[in-house]
Image 1 (cartoon, rainbow, N blue to C red):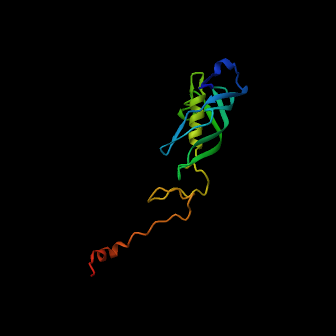
Image 2 (cartoon, rainbow, N blue to C red):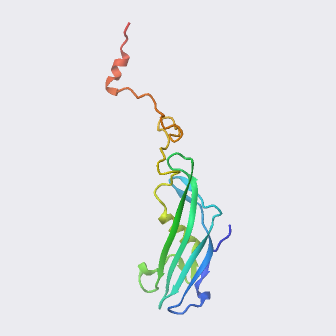
Image 3 (cartoon, helix red, strand yellow):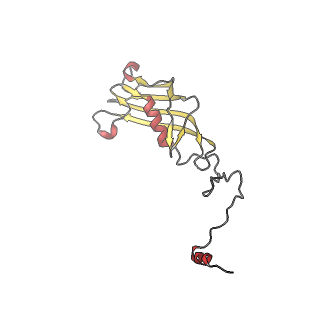
Amino acid sequence: MGGTNTIDLERLGLSSGEAVARTEPVAIDAIELGGQRYTAPGAVVDARVDISRTTSGYALRIRYEIRLEGPCMRCLEAAAHELSIDAREVDQPGGGEDLRSPYLDGDELDLRSWARDALVLALPTRILCSDDCRGLCGVCGANLNEDPGHAHEREPDPRWAKLSELKLD
């Protein structure tokens, strides 16, 4: 699998107040959501990475578009979801835990982990084949999108169950 995994920020040679914008190919691993596996076709996205040097650290931003494909969470047919990812990170050593980026180790920026985590945070709660997906029948598993009139005989009312034991001759 191709794609950039890290950027060495020291090699950029940025001084305080300077910034650079780069487009980097980043590998995106498959995502497990609700017990289902979702993948990006090609598994590599072109991410725009903005890196700004501050007085004592970095301000970072990553943006990319991605299409995830996998099963619909209601009917298990093929589904896809388009996402626009826009995530920011700040790394200011000495500024406290809230100002430290977990994706920066020394001067190495872990693009792959950052891109994946930003994707996971942007995921919807459900990926569906369509907004009006009817799902599967809870009794027999039939796809209700293919047979909207699908129905089963109603279960008898349990309050009348004893009457079924009567033997009438």
